[in-house]
Image (cartoon, rainbow, N blue to C red):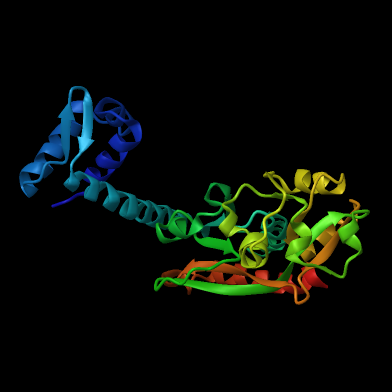
Length: 299
């Protein structure tokens, strides 16, 4: 029978790169670790590793076991953590993954009243899952995913929380700032500054430039919203952001929003959760608070 320890050993050897380091990490002797795996190999008749000199290489069976470990162990660890929290009278921790760079400012508006309303719930923002949170949600590494681009999955539920418009952002004295809207051709001579994300995940490319077969003259990436908008305000380029965010920054920076195309680029922000967590009260409360933020942000 495959036991939890077998999965932990395979995952830890993969993480650490050697039996010795894996044994130390798991507080086992190397002989106990090796014995456990030999016993599993004897029971199943399948080799887990092949040794080449000092190197260990997973067999096909070993790779299958590692994939299972990466799926199952986070769920078991989460279950244990939640049981311990219930035993202490705590609600737990809401782990949020961000798949939207500019949404961090939005999240700050939600978290403060939420923490006041739910004093027994901690909030942890997992930014390492930016632009790759779907797998993290499915594997139970996070509990809630903030994304403008949901992907349908049978075990996931995506709730829309508010509508917004994606706009071009220019310096206040930029020639394009005087237009009621810009066409894709207007950006052919511009420097476009964006977050460090694949171009097909950026709305300005996927929904505006690429359908018209247009590319900007130059393309730069900046990770931080504040620095990005400082560059735009200084006339170093243009960018694309949610209109509500641009309006907030326009109070302190000489920048202006300009509609992308005559009809504009309309978007929605979604919160994704696992279907099995649909009845978790503090998750539902966060989603309701996020819906209320629509009025707070766009008023």
